[in-house]
Length: 437
View 1 (cartoon, rainbow, N blue to C red):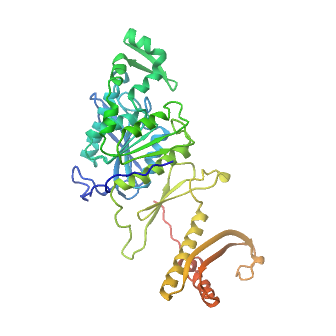
View 2 (view 1 turned 180 degrees about the horizontal axis):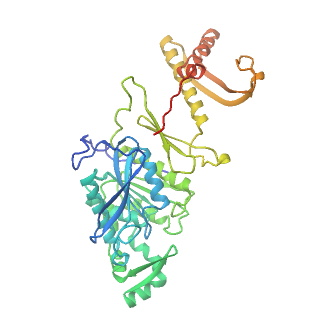
View 3 (view 1 turned 180 degrees about the vertical axis):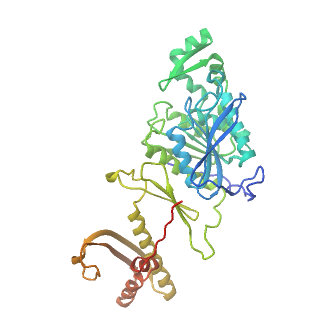
């Protein structure tokens, strides 16, 4: 279920500034194309922190900062998939390893929740100085609690999203129950989280127990999206209710119905990312004019998406699409297959052409529906084919038109449908030139 964001007015007006201007938020034209860029910056303990900036194809509409879960790193399935999906929507995302984790320097035993928040602020500062300040803050699990705490120290942030976040950082101590007595008696202990050993000191417990988290949420002053899986066995769904109730509008809640705490199923992570991107679009600048050449032709860029062996990311000007193969041939079915996209192109062109013709001629055409099917048939079964042997591609189209149309008008619409530009392209000689680089 979803509660729409509400509140006064829309997002503040954004001045589009050149990407080289410090502290600007606008359209940064990145040289990287569907790639990630490594980033290193200094964290709260003076140690180098390792980050990865996922960049979209084409102009960057906004920048987001992602905080991973407790003892996780920037390469978790949740962080990587959400970052890549947001990049498809024009949002550059910096995900990084907190001090003492992943590829970052420092000793985890010296860290706590406060140092995590400081690491986030340092990351935002680095983005502001080297790229552009983050407009969106995203946190998973304890990282969600961290972005709620850090938001007031990132003045450019407009929207905050949490995924499976605890309402209070102290919640994380339930993972340390067995070692808590030893920590309190000896000052530190080794605990195992997700099978990995970590040294935790008494100062960590004292720090998470002293956080004024509810007050931070109440005075957040930014749009909030709370995403949580009802079946989350690590951080219960009641935490989402507490966060939502404490926050002021605009705020939204989305249930990740089939997910677990880590969103280990790629489909759950992709769904969360898609919803998050749609929600965030209200709080970031509108896309620039579509990318065309002097003749008005659109450039299309297709690159591997990384979501399985065949998934593709397609940029058509400012529009992002996906393509894939079905599971029957080894794909993950994250989008239509190439022939599905081909039929979609023909169907869209047919419907648009009929609409344009009806408007120009004043025909009472209320609605058009085009249904298409692609098969390969034997040439001898085709009465109108030039090819006499073997198989030929066969596209069958069913065009449904609604309106007070007479027989002559309906016949004319069928003639016009076969004159749509994509239809003519498929029927004509087409020259395709490719080069490898």
